[in-house]
Length: 388
Image 1 (cartoon, rainbow, N blue to C red):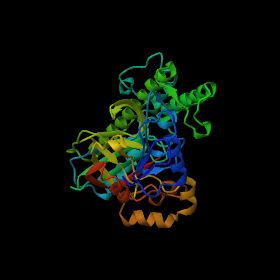
Image 2 (cartoon, rainbow, N blue to C red):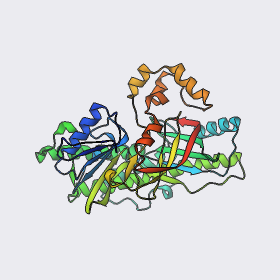
Image 3 (cartoon, helix red, strand yellow):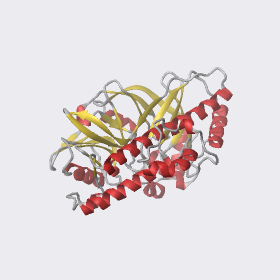
Image 4 (spheres, helix red, strand yellow):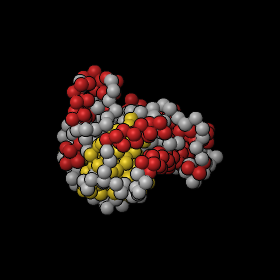
């Protein structure tokens, strides 16, 4: 931990020195919520978000905040180590091209429905109002990447073995669930004359209410859907690799989510832990901290630090907003940096600069700042990148 802010109702513990004022003010808002517990934890990759900073960890008693999870419920990363340690540039190009043809990106979905067997196994209860309504659309969204910072990367580990890494979430299903329950929370908070300032965008739902219980149920379904989405894409990528490498095998996938709320016990209390752009890091738990498309990603193992509510960063974190990056970064400079490293990147024009390496914080510094939260197990270098 780098520093503690002690000016609010509960402390704010920070794992970075350079937090922007907007994100710090959002952390102050969290610390002044009447139901926030013990302290607020702000991870090393934190930056300004909607209501709650990305890279924030909030513990609450008896309530859940939809904006403390965000709109891409269950967004996360999975990674698989392959048995191969050699991949030539031409094969990389061919594999990347095949992935683009197979997996829809951006706003695109599959034209046909995926199998229901790939959906979360707990079924859809009648109480899941939004999931039930969106279920048919979700069958077409399953196995799609999305846009913004979602990616598929082919990487090389410390021992030269090739890895596959996928970052994606719950697609439009999670967006619809998040929007419905945040709107409901705002209306109810106005009706209850909630002490929470509506400008903070942190409307809450009591866990012991029907709507609070329904949100948790639908949110948890979206977390499982996001996992299913990543695993379906992973299977498609593995199939493509097998068409080029007949003797290849794959390790069991590592999977983490970084946008969700979970019932956990900390400091002897039953709590709801909101991780918005933060990853769980219990003792010995394997996790993934990806960098930008021009920087390393890390396989890590949690140290179970109670001060972070057993959490760590979910990535490098943005240092420039999307439009700011498109305006201020130099296209030729960013492309030259990637091509110098031999990375098959995804920057084609100025509009792609929002995902250029220069838009992100230094991942090495981010990892260093959380040495008390995780141990690095493997370092992965990007070779080829697919983005929406």
